[in-house]
Length: 582
Image (cartoon, rainbow, N blue to C red):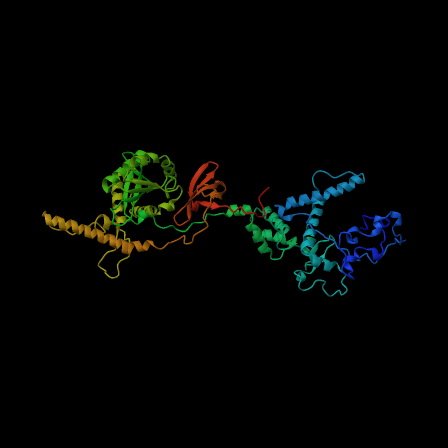
């Protein structure tokens, strides 16, 4: 009211005529009828203005109504939002430009030339000091206030013992920055910044930006050198911990160190657990080679087709080329001797472990559609594993290794003939199929362990005791029943002794976070340097029955790739301090 009105606009009213007293000074029940003065006001207001009561007032200032304390509301806003900056250089340059503007306004008012163009070293230095002051005033305000107060007792510290800076002997330098009083003032080989480093808080966006800037300057390596460079100018409590935190949030380092997380080892497929069925009913196919043979005066290449199944037996079939027709002939030769399989499992032609580069290139030319069209019937199913996933076919990859070791110990000539190669494959087939699947029984030393040959030949090495020939009807019937009894006995041993050994997982014990659609991943490719690995986005995460994602489809610049989870490194793109190169 004092600001919006003048004293001459106010009039005096006697207390007896003051209507407000009817509500505050009750002597009797006030009259609140419609004709009362509570609703009409004082009676003189209805008269002419000249008839109003007049009293001479002293319009001087009084100290009785003016309060010595004034209430007001203060809203503090940070001059800069540190968390919005991703690089120290950008923050420094923006602060320098902000400080240049008022300076140019003063120069223009004084009719002086304004400063434009590239920032100078002096402007950047002033901007750095300005930033450090703002940070210290926000974090160490009580300590700075205590240090500015005059210290009446020189030998008594100005800071209380509860202060986090008490043991650092802080002081305010000439440029107004809070620094640590060091003990190397007498050294002539370091500058003043190293003798009295600037105090910075451990957790602050500006501290993170400074650490990230030096971390980037040394190419995201040489971590001890980075710590040494930081200590030459700044003192950060628990510097190593702060540096590790910033380095863990560095996007470049996260991309460089990203690695795939292997899901928990899945349960065995049903094709590995089919008991009481004909051997080679469920097979896996893989090539290995090439092997060189002598044909006349020239040398040719041969590849070997290896098939494995539920009872872990192998069948080695020689393929004379890597064409689709040659593959069909090799499979037909296998079917002619082992019978038609119920399901065929194979790779897609891009992951043949141990094969040569030529083998990988030639197998990509195989017409898989033609193979499926030829062999897939109402009785036979063909299943392909994902590309670049040899562990999906570990059942036959392990047998490839056994065949190669046996082949190495045979010490054959470097270039055998076709006849010798066929003989070697037959011998190796017998040796590998004679390997024991179970341990030697402890209760019966005379019984032999179970081998794949027991299901193929009836014994571990195919030998049978000689018996007299009897072509009578009851003898043939009895012999057939005995063969069925022996086959069932082998399968019962397979269930009791061998199946139990497949229960325990040998690696990949714990489940991991599944890959989700939309994740940005790096596709691991051992044939390329890490910097050349393609990046992409997951468009389809294929889940198994246990909820784990063991393969996914990735959209890359060259199309959609299907890869196993062990070849996909998910990138952590959470919001962190960016230290990527500008």
